[in-house]
Length: 474
Ligand code: SF4
Image 1 (cartoon, rainbow, N blue to C red):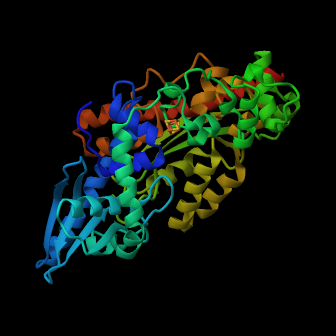
Image 2: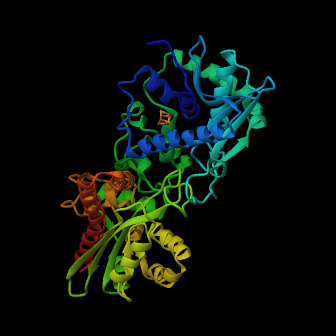
């Protein structure tokens, strides 16, 4: 193994799970890194963009002695590149940790205090005294109006005391991490075998190859104590779950589906759901854009606004029409809402998947455009969530514990998928839209076509799933 290097990112991974960091550092070819997702690329780009505005903020201040990206190394492998370091003029030094979030986070997955503390410990062990520590984040209430105003968009939180409180503990954890990484570890098994799926990382299958897919971890809301009870009985696969093992109704349905090799269907409940729909049916889906640094006047950090929709309209006689809209400029959804007014009729159910997302966008736009509020609120009143059917009334172990349309569609409508599409998910759509509005006309046209195809697939998928349900309970 090469000599150990421990960065802030490594350290945070260590705090979440020492063993996953050990695998990453010691067996990098085994580590399931997957692709650097479009979403992750966007986060990294946004982080750099926020850093540029912090730099601009200090530049505007004129007389501040700030060094960006100062690097610190220690002989035992610690490495820190500090976002900003300021010589305060009175002989003291302040360290700035820059984040694109809208608050100082201290949860298990994102602990900004620990992040900053690692940087301080590393810098100090490399000989740089740090007297104050600031976390620079975005002001969630900032509303862009013209050029970005870094002073209004950025918030500087003095976290010196919070960092000092955890410093000795963090320093010990850093030493423990270095020791742990240099140790030998068993590749067989890891502690998440006792925990619920929400805790598992991508390395779960590497350490626990005996766990099949689907498994007891695919059961909805299965608590750790139940996992323990099942493991006591040597049960990992759904085929081995005993008939008398106490499970919730939703969990038992998944087990039954797996053991019987077929979905568990409540035809009566599905019939009721379908009978309450009012024609014409409007199968509807938004694509939205959001960014850390607000793109447009009137927007705030990380606030979504719709840039596209697809609408399939199914009449009672079975005829299907498609409507769509794609905003091709960097522009708020005023024209989009106008087009929606033209495309939606006054009556008929609006069918979405995970409808809370569409409803929230409608509520936000109703506030932004009071003249359209009645229309947007009425869409919400008419909205039903097709995903609900697959939570309780049609349960298939093949969904692997998820009711996302990307999991349900290939099981119930195997003739339809997203594989051949250039844009395959919402994060890629967001990234593509941003490329499109900045692209030359030819390139922009191609990206627009890809975006339209993707959104159309989402609503056509709902139409096909609806038809599948109709056939099922006919
Ligand atoms: S599955 Fe859990 S215990 Fe195992 S390596 Fe991942 S995070 Fe660590």
